[in-house]
Length: 101
Picture 1 (cartoon, rainbow, N blue to C red):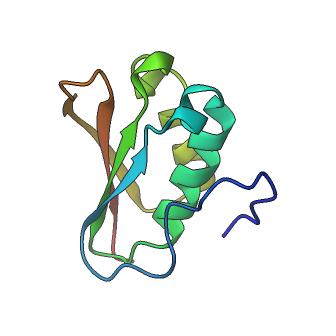
Picture 2: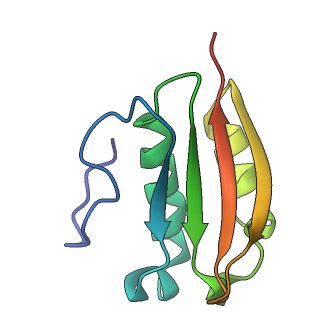
């Protein structure tokens, strides 16, 4: 996982061997798109193959396809990304399936 030196709470604390959601829509995420990208990568690393993580991103940055998906696809093999929906609060949910090898 990426070492976080910004003082921002990490989105994960260990490996997730079930599908789960990562909250990337806090006020710190509204101010820092790069933080969303890095913590989304950390969330994927922490997700066991065969499961998915819902990446809930802050609405201030718009649709995650425009800034997040290419970054994730470049960083990982064996990943399938799909858009789920926009939350009532304005955030967006991207589902990242970690495929089994």
